Length: 87
Image 1: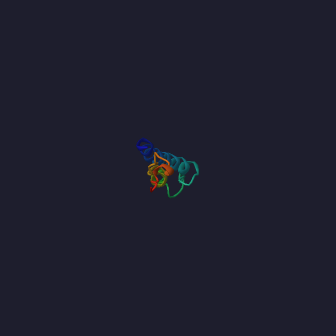
Image 2: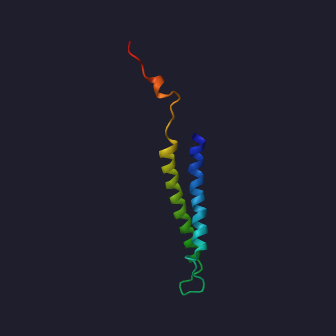
């Protein structure tokens, strides 16, 4: 389970960052080219901000999945075999 937890903590934030960069640039929300606000770096900052937001959301999702699903140990024995009978 340790490798699954590590994979979740690495893959979800990176996937979220890539999704944030893609969505931030694909939606046109970062497009200021040719406007009075165009200073040449605004679009880069917007795309990087979208990536940072995606990274943060991916990290939060990884923590939630790790603590709620992957952190619990499963018992090897069924509950019926643990109960002692008094004589």
